[in-house]
Structures are given as C-alpha cells and as structure tokens.
Length: 225
View 1 (cartoon, rainbow, N blue to C red):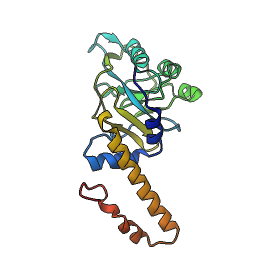
View 2 (cartoon, one colour; view 1 turned 90 degrees about the vertical axis):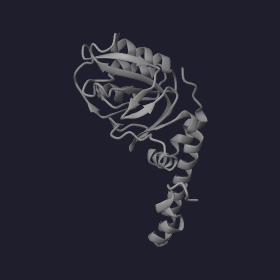
View 3 (cartoon, rainbow, N blue to C red; view 1 turned 45 degrees about the horizontal axis):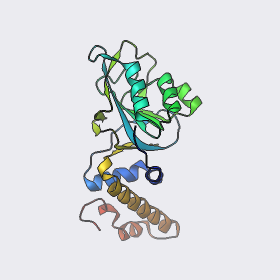
C-alpha cells in the first residue's frame, strides 16, 4: 500500500493544478494529461498513485472486475486510483461497485483517461472521479486487466505507483515522486506571485506594470530569477 504524507497532501491541495503545471513546465517535466476532468462537481484530490491498466477483452487473462478490486485494495487509504484505459477508451473503466470499494478502502478518488459510469452512485457516497467522459454499458466482456501496481499511462503521461496525482476543476497533473519537493516549491512560488499581482491590481496598480514587476512572462523560463 502507498505511504501517504498528509503534510505533503495538504500542501499540494493549497495550490492549483495550473500552478503545478507551471512548475512542471519550468522544470521540463511532462505531467499534464489533457481532458481528464471532473465527471461531476466534486472536491479537489491529491495523493500517491495506485495504478491499473485495462485492455480490450481477450488481450489479458485477468478479469477487469477482479483486477480493479485488487488494485484498489493494494493501493490503500489515501491513494488515488489511476486507470490506464488508453487501449480501450470507449469502454467503461470504473463503475459503482469499484467506486464503493474505493470509498470503503479509503482511496481519495479515481482518475482515468477512459470513460466511466454510475455517476449517480459516486455522488451519493462522495467519491471524486475524473475521466474523459461517461458511458452506460458494462465493462463485462468488453475489457480485461493487464496489470496493477505497475507503470501505466494517463493521457500519454507515464504514471508509476507512488507518483503524486493532483486533480481539480482545471484537470489532472502527475508529479514524479522523486521530484515532489522542487515541483511543490515552484508551484507555491507561482501561486504567491499571481496572488501578489492580483492584490496589486485590486489596490490600484497599473496591470501591465504589476505583471512586468514580477517578470510574469518569463517566470517559467529556467534563466528567470
């Protein structure tokens, strides 16, 4: 099971995925998959990845249903279930039973580059789900499990077990576990800078001057201070 640093989670929850994406840009890290969005209005989530890969039926031996449940249990409390559905993007990747099991086991949410169903059930038990769309059909007979607790892809971005996932209204980001500190530090700097610009404008400063004062256009460049 993932070891969850609650202080780190709290710090990442205090910056947006846009702030984090800016930090990833500054550090040259690919970690911003597009289109993995909240399926319904929900809370922001952050935590280490518990991974799962689904493929079309017949391409792997394990049942999707059982593989998903095993991935959830293996991930454990505080983790975010990451489902790679890139090879079967139009088939349901996560349903109500999986959502209830995730909630019961303390997972904080699920993100997938596929489609999901049973949204009404997620709402009832407050399980945050981020995906590329909604489906009605069952996963049964339409996909199989190619593994869990392994490196996967989320919208083309590599996710390893333990990498950090943050998701909010703007989408989802992936932070490599060995670079958490530097990504967080720059994301916090971005947030502080933007908060200062907004405060200055509200206090009557010229908007252009407020931006130029902090070198806003160039702050993501490596040579910028």
